[in-house]
Image 1: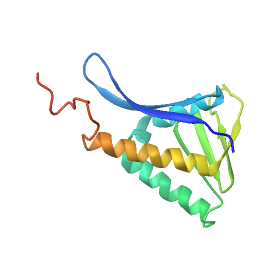
Image 2 (image 1 turned 60 degrees about the vertical axis):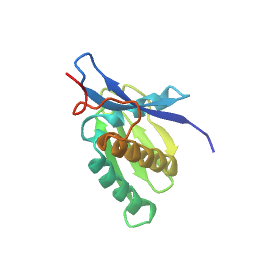
Image 3 (image 1 turned 135 degrees about the horizontal axis):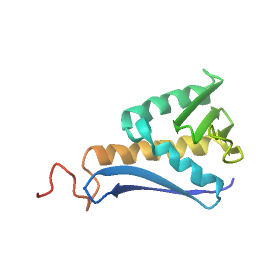
Image 4 (image 1 turned 30 degrees about the vertical axis):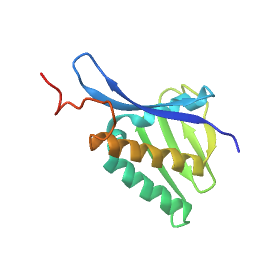
Length: 132
């Protein structure tokens, strides 16, 4: 099975605003998966919903489930292989991934978001606790 790498981070802008994001390597295609951190996809509650839905696909209770952070990267999740497509001007060629890999990084993303939302990332100064 092909191995790809991913990492999760918290970006902090000059005004102290924080946002979680993800990066992928080694292929150029995988970098598009980073868009799955946008919008509601940066909230653990939404990711929990998605994990439940893809669990139903993997268990055979649903044929497929589509999810996205924005129109740039849309996951058409199916039991064995899922397709990642672009909804904006066909900016990249669709590609496939093993569905279990998607489930794995989404589970890891969920756990990362829980840590961030619960102020449990060592070394990070959370907005509610920093000195002003």
